Each structure stands twice: as C-alpha cells, then as structure tokens.
Length: 245
Image (tube, rainbow, N blue to C red):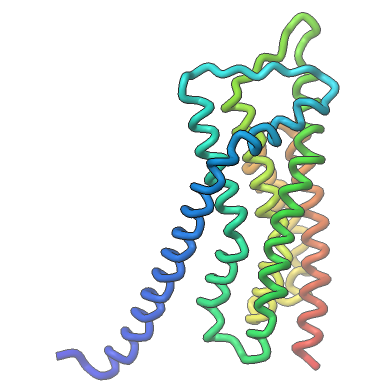
C-alpha cells in the first residue's frame, strides 16, 4: 500500500510526463504532415539551395555520385522545411507545457514570444544562407589551384549548407533563451557581465565544434554570437529592471 505522501509527490510528476508526451506527439505529427507536404515542393527547395552556386566568383560543378542521392536529399530537405514551418506550433507546445507554472500576466506574452522565437530562427538562418554561405564557398573554392576543377558531390554540398544554416538559426535563439532564464530567475544581467570573458572562450569553442574545421567559418559564427551575447545582456537588463520595479 502506497503512502499518501508518495502519491502526492509521484502523481504530479507523472502528470507532467504525460503532458510532455502529448505535447511532443502533437509536435511530431505537425512536423510529419508538413514534411509530407514539403516533399511535393522539394524540387523548388533544392533549386533555391543552389542559389549560392550561381552567385559566387569561383565556378563549382555539383555531381551526383550515388543513384539514391537526390531522393535522399529531397527527403532531408522536406524534413528540414517541415520542422521550420512547424516552429510556431512547436514553440506553442513548449509554451503550453510551461504556461501552468507562469503568472496570468506572463501568459499574455505567448504570441509575441512565439513570433519573436520564430523570427529569430528565420533571421539567423537567412543570415547564414545569404551572407555566410557565399563567403565560405568563395573562400574554400578559391584555395583550389588553377588547374584543378571544383567538382563537389551534391550531398556534401547540401550537408555543408544545411549545417551552416541550421547552426545560425539555432544560435540566433540566444536572446529568447536569455529572456526565459532571466524571467525564471536563473540568470541576471550582472551574472552575464561578470562571466563575459568565460562566455567569449565558450563561444569560440562552440564555433569550432559547430562549423567546418577552418578558422574563417569559425570566426564568421563567433562574431554574430558575440554580438548576440551583448544583445542578450541588454534584454536581460531590461527584463530584470522591470521585475525589480
């Protein structure tokens, strides 16, 4: 026979797990539906990803080395687009999971937070694709000797592009994470300023891990991260001052 205290502790925890499971399933269903729909437009998406190859100084020849390469790439593209299109719904599910622990006035921020989180990801992804990718491609292709033709496998090219775009999209969520952690009291602007030097070291380590192994691309990721960190301090300061008043 279970003791009353044990049931009082375990039931809420189990309820939270069940709620999390429902939210995750709903998010996965939404992504799956959007992925299937996106697959029908995969030709246009793939052509869009080839935009950078038509706007760089050094020529590049993309090759298909395996029979199933294009099909696999289209599936991966559809999945990525499905996740991106599903971001507002995914963010809503995350918000709905944590909302019961928030005050009524804090719940009113659900729409601005979801919009800002989605916009931050899209801005980061766009910055990575339209600014970083062409620069990185030109830099790497320029290293080839004049008598060497740049023949690149299509799946390698796609992997390079997808990695950079997704990384920049994710790191641009830093202000949202800061806003949330400041709201629940885990960080303060003084804490962020105090550990700025350590954050710089961590940022360059992350840039080295998340990007291809070359200093140029690492710096191109580290600099926006440093700017975002300073922006995060500013957001945390504004929010912290409002909480103190």
